[in-house]
Amino acid sequence: MRQTFTIRDKIKQLWTIFIPILITQLAMFSMSFFDIMMTGKYSADHLAGVAVGSSYWVPINTGLSGILLSVTPIVAHLIGANKKEKVPFSVLQGVYAGIAMALFIIVIGFFVLNPLLNGMNLDNEVRKVAKYYLISLSFGIVPLFVYNVLRSFIDALGKTRVTMIVTLSSLPINVTLNYILIFGKLGFPELGGIGAGIASAITYWIITFIAVWIIHRKKPFIDYKIFHSFPTISFNKWKEIFSLGVPIGLSIFIETSIFSAVTLFMSDFGTKVIAAHQAALNFSSFIYMIPLSISMALTILVGFESGAKRNKDARLYSYLGIGGGIILSLITGTLLFIFRGNIAFLYSNDLDVVDLITKFLLFGVFFQLSDAILAPIQGALRGYKDVNVTFIMALISFWVIGLPLGYVLATITELGPFGYWLGLIAGLAIGAMTLSSRLIYVQRKQIRIQKSELA
Figure 1: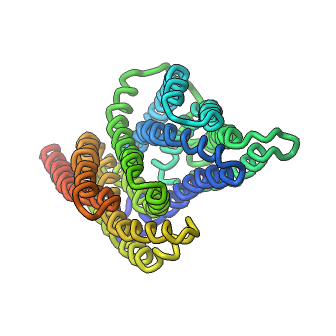
Figure 2: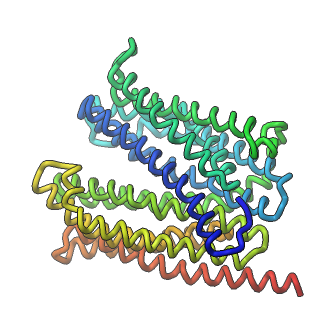
Figure 3: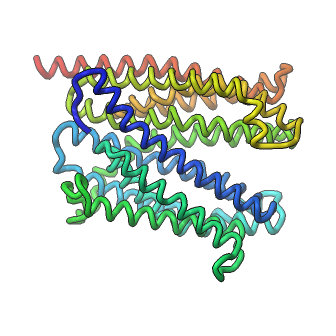
């Protein structure tokens, strides 16, 4: 990553960082997709068990991993401020914090897993698969959280292509392990959905060892000497990591858990509506990888420029990212509108379900347009280390405005289940407008601070 002087150079650097992040996110999305798909080929009960386990694991994983994303702006600021000697300490404290969080989750899971599953109306086989799928995953939580910290460090240097290669290499490993352990190949027993959990845990260990090896042996990472010494735990540094990371993690948790809540409400409308909603949501999540990747790229670039006190450059990157997100969303939105019927047939051959998916995807067009504005703004604000307001607005947008409005539209109007999507679209739009104002405020504040320091 380097200082840029022209808009053309900034667009090129933004694009260079964004594309590998996008490929990485799509690869990670595909890993979950293959878990579900391959387990579904094995058994409906095992698919249900994995689905139940995932419904607990995904919000927790994304929320807590989001806390560790704070390492990215912390390191980006240090590099921008030319304080590279402080980077190893911050990264290792992030690793320590990640290990502590992972162990905490494992201990909590030991006490609450059985009561949670026993409290659900599940068949014995489904409950068994869900339980041991989650237990299997737990053996990979520590390396997964460590990898999230190491990835944040690598990305903060602008070397997003490295994490792309690591993640892409993990995809065939995960698929191969799934095949062996789910279906019992090469002499291994048939484990079904439980095998998918074991495969994921092994994959987490492998990608973590690969990341450690790269950081320890390859330039420019070797220059930072991350693993040359191991300082003691610094709770002051942990305070910085968590003060930035907790609002980020909570924002992500709020955004992911809202869809679980909507799915529960959808149960009033029947099985076909739930299936169509889940299919449309799955494809919308796939498209969301684009603005999410722009958001992550902006956190890196804005953090780098803000740390170097180049506020004009940081502001320009923000606008380029938001503008790029809008342009890409117009393209994907148009394609989604045109081909939504074809997309629906990818998920089902039931004509009633296909019709419902097509209607949900029409709302998905407007959903992703709002996301294309909101996500990049969130990324830019994280680059400025401004995270608390982002969390508050995510809470208000989804839970105070989106879900209640959706419930009202779904129950007292003829919109039915589509009312929930319209409510979330409204919440997203309001969140985008308020956070736009916040971004302008933060940027002006940065300029005022810089002027006062020069005076």
